[in-house]
Image (cartoon, rainbow, N blue to C red; front, side, top):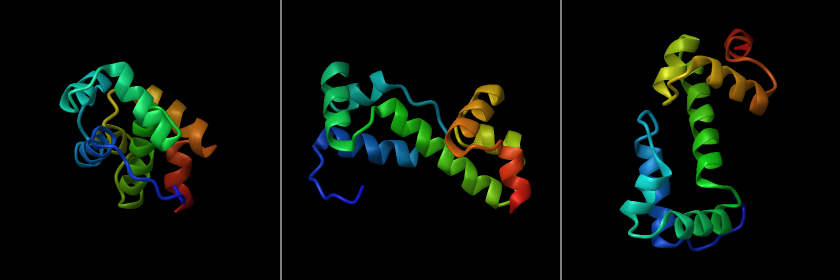
Length: 110
C-alpha cells in the first residue's frame, strides 16, 4: 500500500511468515496462535491494517508468486504446486478471476 502505517506485531509477524512460507500450507488459525491472539482478533487487526482479510492477502500473494514461477519457465502445474496450491482447478479459476486470463495464457504471452 502507498500509505504508511505502523503494523501491529501480530500482523507484521504474519506477513513475514506468509512471505517466507508461501509454498507451504498456511492456516489462519496457526497465524493467530503464533501471534498469541484469537482468530477473531487477528482477522480484525489484519483487515484494519491491510484492507483485506488474511485469506485474501494470502491468495493474492500466492497468485503473484505463481506469476514469477511462470516467468521463470515453470509449467502451470509446477507454478500451481510451487506457490502453495493443492488443487490446480482452483488455482486456474482464481488466477483467471484476478488476472483475467488463465495461467497458460499468461505463460504464452511472455
